[in-house]
Image (tube, rainbow, N blue to C red; front, side, top):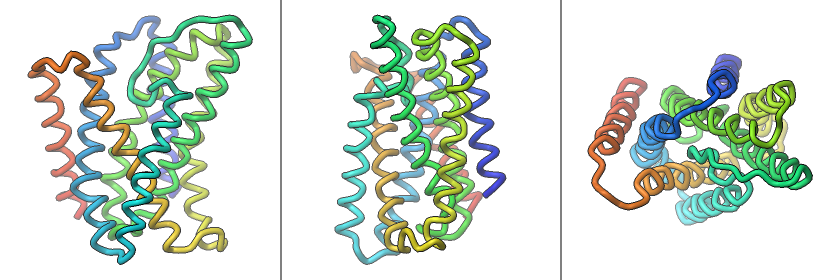
Length: 248
């Protein structure tokens, strides 16, 4: 639990600090990283998470319902995040009051998303043995680094003070570790049942599906052939399959 929390914290800090250090980050570079991360996340969701959820638990109908709820909940979160979690770095400057509220709502929505990611990493055995933890952790980390980079690029337009930007980055970086901690204690404390943990896992799987598929769609807005994107996607999927085989 502690190692996972440290890895999640460092991955967010690395992405965010890189954005603060480099004045201009090329969005094309972030997109390439996100396509790879999205392909990896999509692949482990399809190859591992969904089959295990449906195979090992009898309430398959409710599992499907919670996957859908998680999918559409992520759509609602994106209303507040403007797609930062899948690489959107554009921001329109407004008045101070609007900018402050926009920055606050962005942080809250992203922290909710990061917190939920952390909760399922506390219980990888929900869908199978503990081996699934390595694959899931890799997928979340690959997604978190470019997401933190995009977040800090956007927040720098809302807040001019570096100190405030660092505080917000620290809060975001702590969200997933707090999720791991909460996920670890929810069931023993009697706040959620074992079945509830399964539904939570299905809910977050729906989040993953929304994020990963949105990355694919938005990386080629004109729907033109892009050999680079295809190669990066195949590499991400291949690594997901290899890591699944390695950790099994």
